[in-house]
Length: 301
Image 1 (cartoon, rainbow, N blue to C red):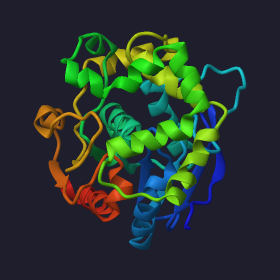
Image 2: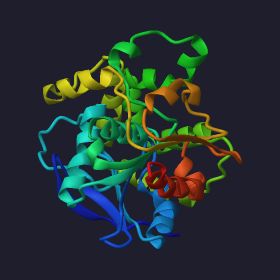
Image 3: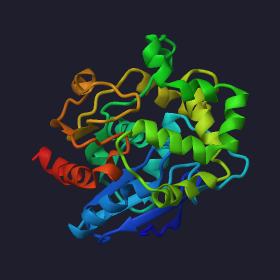
């Protein structure tokens, strides 16, 4: 089975495990994965983009794969501003001034933050499920019961029992999420196992649990991100050229396109990808995702 090879790059607080493909002088593309997935969500996308001359950069997020903290004592922080700074620090370390940025799940949120707050670094944005920048104040408002049910794992992680359960059963947990979030995706055991090795990272459980507890106001972030979080809580618009994508069989919580269309104030297009495509859209529909990456750079021209 095909697999990415990675190298380690010191960037900001991390030694990042990053896969790269394509010519070093090609237009840069940064692709960000989500939870509970890994860089292999972009394996086919990466091959397609590299073949068309792009420089493709696919990092393991903090807490995944071979990415490690440079300081053993650093907080294992999963808040949204920290992940966005990770992405910017990696671009800096690789000498990339400007890139198309794409993502899904956590990666879509991170990509949108970078695009909203640092548009000079972003040639275009491809975001699955649209605008996912969050506000802890907004998260305090209760949702209707059916919507709360879809976030069951967020409440599970809010407990010590949930943290321990995830630590003990992370592969079974991830496979359950894969199946419920993409109910029509027929992945095999080898495909899952290839990604599941990324969850063996020693920081994985702490990062995941902190991410969801922070969202609900149950865990503190780091003070150096306070100003950034205030900006994000205001819901900043995204002015760079953007294509949002949604699978027609996404079983994970996600907003309807009409709810976020107004957040994208630059050249904008939404595409619904049909054929039973779920939450892990880049891996389930790689041609649709790669086409969006190529097309978004032209959208503003």
